[in-house]
Length: 447
Image 1 (cartoon, one colour):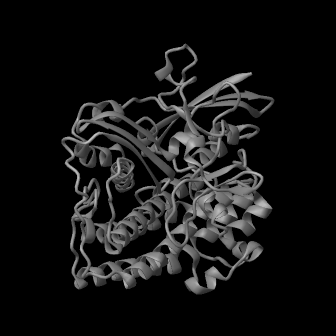
Image 2 (spheres, helix red, strand yellow):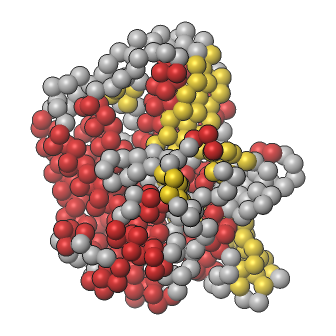
Image 3 (cartoon, one colour):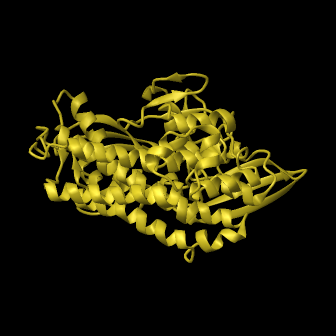
């Protein structure tokens, strides 16, 4: 048996893939997150509202999701303590819009900047279009993703690392002109999706199912599918086939858990283990990441999980044939660019700008004691923040990121989700692509 070690860069942070080979196939695999950051420890002892500024810095891509998880954890703590905390419909819509925009910008950047350049290694003639830095679509992908970030900034004031969500609502008060500008930017994202991603009108795309998706989508997503079929990526990358979505974004993302059947998500069944993390100091550790389990089992989170649980007809038709392969996992992520963009436009049409942006929760944060949990959907999947406050100071803070679910190490019974997806592969290039198909973010994993 031989061992290979590869450090994967050109992602959010870096990850080491250590693989053991036998008879030309991967016999065992270890996903190693080599850095430690310690945000949970940084937060201890600080005033509770400091978390609104600190947690968005956990990630440079999905800081918005961390902010929302923090805010909802604090609001949950207030409610558990008997305080009546409510936000207006306007504030809820604006939170949903910016949360969705952040996911959209991530998906565009991930597909064009981080994932498609890997396929150039399998098909060099794609370099002119998808090669890093010089490829035509690399540049266009950056521009398209910037439409979403500009739209976020129009509402939230800046991107990344804004703190415009606060307990009780939001701090912004957009005008009608701001909403129209956001709509125009989102429509530019949709036009990019039509012209470059799928090569057809979005209404026509939404009608496709199964084999029609592979045969009629002629844009960059069609090119991706061709490379998948040519290189076995329609089979490679299958893991446990168990999916988890803790948060929801109406109307296109529903919470739930799916193994043999779909059930409601139950937060009490979530657990964290550090048996194979350096954090345990028991000699078994090989990564700075902890691992997350649901009912003691590994579950995949992210766009594929979201769209399987939400019964997206395009993704479920692909899943029936190809299961949780690279082909379906990536397609689900790209599909969310459109469905979230359409949902954003619908929400913007319904926002009442005359409503208040913020309602005073009636709590003195300097004297408050309590505990709460926030569960939201980030670009890479379910994000959970847990907080305990004592006399206005953070006594305990815990973050379970999507990449802890997917990239977290094994436990004493099960491999991690990504590690499981590696078993049986016959190529280092394919192994790297399988790992990247989960949208790797090591800085979130090792927060």
